[in-house]
Image (tube, rainbow, N blue to C red):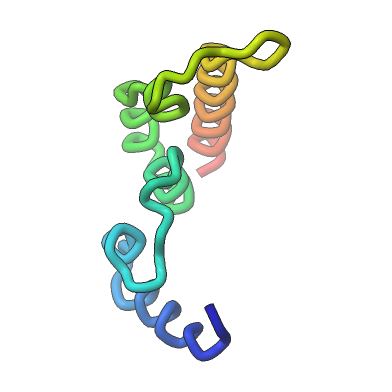
Amino acid sequence: MTAHALPGIEAELTAATDFRPSIKAGKYWQVDGFPFSDMLILLHLEQWDEAQRLLETTDWYHKLNPQNIRDYPNKTTTEEDVQHATRTLADYIETHRKDS
């Protein structure tokens, strides 16, 4: 991506108050496959209730290990990764919900 693309990127993000459709289908955005893309967007938009709902309804094991690759010895397990991610997200949502 070059500097001449920046005006197009900015236009996609500022065309509407909710930029989620641009992230999903915009010309310059390829984050939809990232496991936390929907969550990061909700957190950025400070939509705490939606973020909490997503946290509770997402199959995080599948998000973090979609191919169900076995755990390796002496490495964190997928279950440990899931516990860490969900605990971190829950703490972030709770803390920032109180502050808003």
